[in-house]
Length: 432
Image: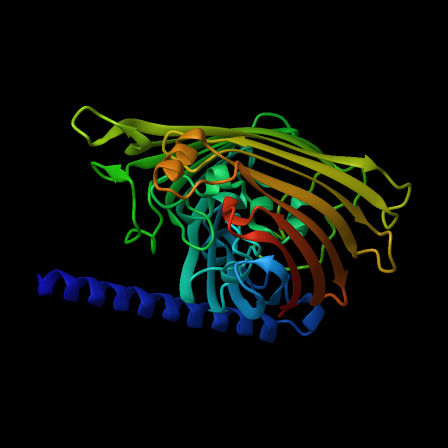
């Protein structure tokens, strides 16, 4: 019995060494890209086919009242990324690549707030890891693209520009999807191998689909409710985008993180569907044998809306946008059966055209099977957890941003024993 454990330990050590080695490579690429640019403000432009950057996000989270316990913690994320133009590097036309690694450190804010949705979007297990490493080839004048490799699903699917202002994890991807399957889909902080196809049917209509490993790396050791393997996850999305009518789209944020290069739009309407192929144990129903009922596959879907409500006559003028997220999961095998999120974001209302302020609400609703399960365990649960967030992003300079944030969480973790929590977050971002 000792041999498999030793092999697992060696495999884990090898993975950590590989990920730290990648981090060093990315750091070298970032330094090289800046060294090649005579003007540091232009260092983010592609140089000789490589565009590298580094970003550090630091955040202090304080539980001011209620929650699991009072107190504060600090955590941070160092992100290193490099985009490759293989046509410029090797003459491979219409081929690009991407590497993205990160190192996480610090405490766990949810230990204080007690919430289930995740009060911070940059929290994860400590250590260095490879998040993305993929190649993409375009066809038909860039209308069709194929991508393969280690891939963050949330980079393109279930994503809204307006919602990206907020720090609560649910505004990146609703918990009915992010907490589904054996151990969640291929998203931060653990990703998986994937193949993705995307087709631009018209300049406004984008169709995309992906097939991913059913269990992300670094999560395979977690408790999973599947049998006969983890299968695959299949995701599809249709998005209609209304492009900006001027050269300055509303998402003018200067930050240089993973999603800074997403295609700009003014309005977005999207619908997505997802399905796991593995077999899952029912949360509460049992067969005559006494074993949990088995369900072949698990499915869900979501609807997204992002609208620009006011359009300024000048590119730097104030703008107000609203967004809506609606999601449904498989309540037979997943805790959260549904989710709803909405918010308002204003840009340019305060000094500095890059500054943003917004208010949003995220509500995750327990499925009936989960509530029945908790009743039988003697730990009854509330129907839902709801987070209300007020946030302000101040872009101090091209490379520095500060973001104070206040969140009020109603029924944290849907546990009646935990009082409603009030949390204050202060995040800063420095890009190199």
